[in-house]
Length: 343
Ligand code: MEV
Image (cartoon, rainbow, N blue to C red; front, side, top):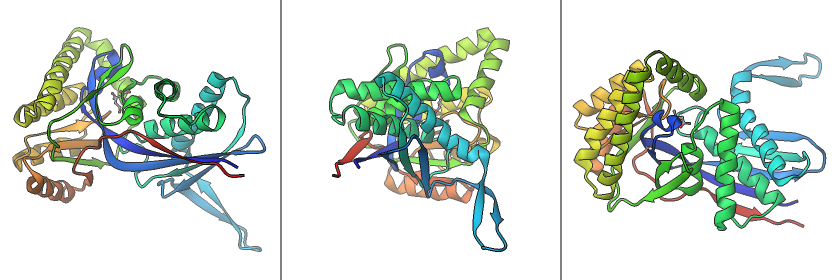
């Protein structure tokens, strides 16, 4: 039976989260933290999903006192968060390829909790679509047509599961590197920085789903349409200036832009108390800039350091405040495939 394994970097948003849902540009990047989605076809129409290290919680254990065998009772929220993207992704892919519903075994390997704010759901969507396309259609993922198909179908998966989603996370994980996202096309233009950044990337537990946070911004926008439109316009301007600052390695300016973007996210009401504290403390510790990254409600944050040693110091500061730091640099690539044909 053929198996296919997709190695997926997760991502952070550098600038423009939430505004990108309203068709504004944003900048995101993959980071060197990986998930694996591995799949193979099964002969009957069953979906078997196995989690490895993936922080799927159990609610309880039912033990048979006579045989001593036991059954695990999963935490529905935790399981459905993982499986809804897999089930929906397979359906979308099968419909697109006009193949009937089939049986699959999908293995998810991740050390990150789902909803860390690092694009784990997008990684599962891209991984599931890539597995399905590879097993049913083509595994020539260097072909730009196939790659775009994966990005588009993964985006459709996120939209269907979450109700609303921009193409930012799925396109960034598909193509990799620092990407200027144009949701109106949709397209992910590469930005190549002349030098590598010293950036601290961490997360705290995320208390709300991305769908909840996108909905809360939508509610605020319906109440304060004019002011929210102005905030979205300012975010767009921040993103345009950040694009140039990245290309010119103007890190002082990038730091200022991060702080402005964070202030806008505070105004949108998506920054947690913990993050306000972490961001302020990192700035007090000399960060050039710091911000919540992604949907908010806790989740991911980033801070720009002056150099490597400074990044190590900021990492210690963030960890002392209870955050988990996962990377000190960005990554240049998107997902990769390993296809094993077995007789
Ligand atoms: C989620 O990673 C970022 C948001 O902008 C939502 C999206 O782009 O779909 C909040």
